[in-house]
Length: 352
Image (cartoon, rainbow, N blue to C red):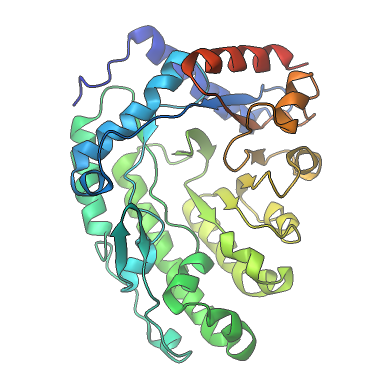
């Protein structure tokens, strides 16, 4: 497998420069250049069952995703991720993982009443699929081609996981049994802190940076706060924010993901201490407007990518880039040839 994707020394050196560019997004936000990633379609040559039962099949599939980026010469870093879906933390607490023709997901909630939230115990670090994650990570480390890094798995966030563990009744509990929700969020946060420290120690010697979504970020982990669109900003401030803050403080900071449609909570995300990056769904929230109000130290990346001919791409190609330089632009192209053209045009359109 080490020979499956061979990268020459010149290309490996280019990626050292790419990672230096990501560091500048944080260390010199007013003097850096935007990073640009160009995605192209890649067909998986295996079934979902093969992909989820054979670690080397999954690794080979992830390595295939890197080939077009290497050819295009964009700013995607050389990273792969053991893809076990978004249910890892709920599965550790006892939720059944559902597999089929797609990514694994957490099944039905395990807590049937509010009182159960007080009785939940913190799981072992190899509970659920985390033992399998450790095994696959070691296999990947033994077979990774030189220069390839491992991204963190998808641990979501305290509230997202609590939502899956308790089910939609958690939204009533926030009003009827708020102390029970706080107890659940605390134990999930405690476990997330322990598991991310455990995972990071296995995949990286760098305590200050981590890889996620094909980019490099300051800190140690991503929080996915998708369920925040279903509660008020005030409920987020009262119940979820303290756990987000505690998690980032314990692991050394990180970035946040939000694919919700409601925009009211975004400004509260931006004020979380130790947040270093944020993405929101650009189809529902104006990326350029977000650039204007985001703090200078927060690196921004769109959720997904800007489609060819989209208003965002056309605006960038016209030279109308945000004044905020520490951003990651993700574009879409139909082929490597088109990707090279899109990348060149975007880079040439940067006015600073």
